[in-house]
Image (tube, rainbow, N blue to C red):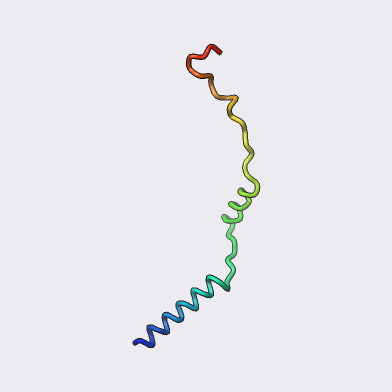
Length: 59
């Protein structure tokens, strides 16, 4: 049993090392869209002209 457990630990370490260091992740469609939004942000519109005057002002 100790050999089986040790073998599983080594296999787990090798698999983890492969997925962390060897295999490069591929970007999914949602990740590509999020990166595009970060690179090309939404247009900013100044909405301060649409704010009503303060209460009590004589404008």
